Length: 125
Image 1 (cartoon, helix red, strand yellow):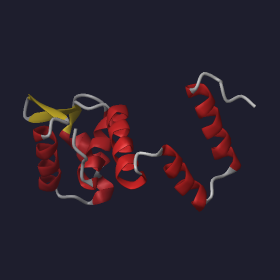
Image 2 (cartoon, rainbow, N blue to C red):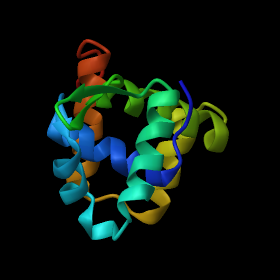
Image 3 (cartoon, rainbow, N blue to C red):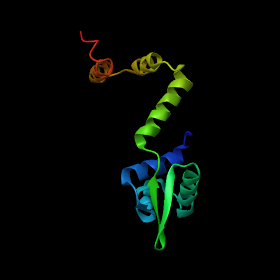
Image 4 (cartoon, one colour):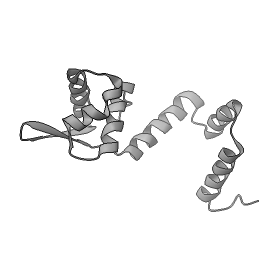
């Protein structure tokens, strides 16, 4: 899997939100806030198809687009990539960077609960 440029990621986010067999018109409507020309959207869709992120199926006079990569799979890939590139593959360094910016008590409690769940409750205090 490859990291997507921000523009292509926005197209994928629109597709993930829409689901399989999304008509081009619906995609354009979802991407309207970006003020991209139809040709620009077509370029992004073509690139995403070439990279294996999107399938294109002709139906009638238009195309239907479906994501081939699940949102959760891309999030996992991107998370590992960021962790590796910026934090030396250390979750501790990542959380420490978040904490320097200030984490709300609720966020810390949610993180603790997640760690407890992932470790089988071994960290219960």
